[in-house]
Structure formats: C-alpha cells, structure tokens
Length: 208
Image (cartoon, rainbow, N blue to C red):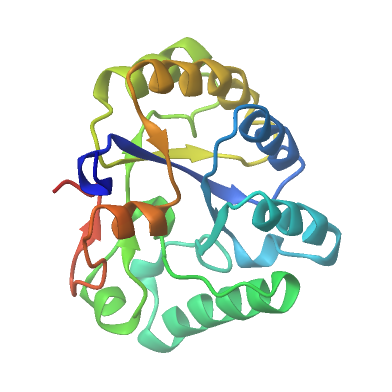
C-alpha cells in the first residue's frame, strides 16, 4: 500500500510544555506513537528543556502556538510578528528545532494574520478537551466517531488537563483498531503528498 493510501492520523497537543506533558509522552511512548506539540513561547523555559529534548528524541514535532496565547486578531502586524518570531526563536534556542507550522490561539484569525505569518496555519478535529468538566469518555467518543483518514486531532496538554490523559490510551487503541497509523503533521502532509504552503488557508485535515 502506498503512503497516500494509508489511513493516517496526526495527534496534536496545544498549550504546553507543562508538567502534564511528560504524562502524555509516557502514553505515546508506551504505544509507539508520535505527535505534534504546538508550544506557547512564554512557557518554553529552561526547566522545560528536558521535556522538549524528550519530544524530539521520540520523533515528535514541535510547532508554534504564539508567545502569549492572546487573541491575535486584535494585534497589529508588528505585534503578530513579535508573537511568532519570539516563539520560533525560543524553541530554536532551547531545543535546536525549526518549527514548520502555526496554530492560532482560539483558532481566531483574520487577514492581517494571514498576510503577516508565513508558516502554514493548522486547525484540526477538536473534542472540547479545553473544557475542564468535559468527561474523558466524551472526548474519546468525539474523536473515534469523527476521525477520518488525514485528520489532525486537536488536544491539549496544559496543566491539570487530566481527562485528556485519561482518554488518551483508549483513543490510541481505538484508532489503531480502526486501522490508523500515527504521524506528525509534517509527515501527514509529506505522506499525503500535499503542499501545506497555501496562502489564506487554515488546514483542518489533509484529505487527498
């Protein structure tokens, strides 16, 4: 079977690195699975360096989720540039990693952002896991019922998001049962032979 015919899914996690991230990495590692982590720049600190080193060693991908996680639709072009550039720079300095993708905070975007940011914009299939009271079972059900070949699943590894950690092992097992292979966002575009560099577009999935 060629890469373009494989059933592929990309797990993605926003709002780290945090003290929850190692728990997510433990589950990924136990299951032989990779993911893409969209990092908030002001959380990329010296004490989180071992987390990022582990992510890279595992074959995971690091990406840009802004520096302050503010609504960037209310910013000037110069402020937007600062949010992106500071995050890209700190990830490079701390982890030696060049980011390739950007996810806007709150998935809020406008033409100024599109015109200013050169990284491809990524959204994904959300399961409302940013809501603290959303049960693990519901998060799991949404993903398993709505996933398709080429889906990017939008999850969060912010502090205390324990229900996502609870749902993750069954989510991985359920996706494997459905015949999915796990890839990073970069690998998803590469294996689907799709160029992510499309102006004024946010990718919710990569369907061929």
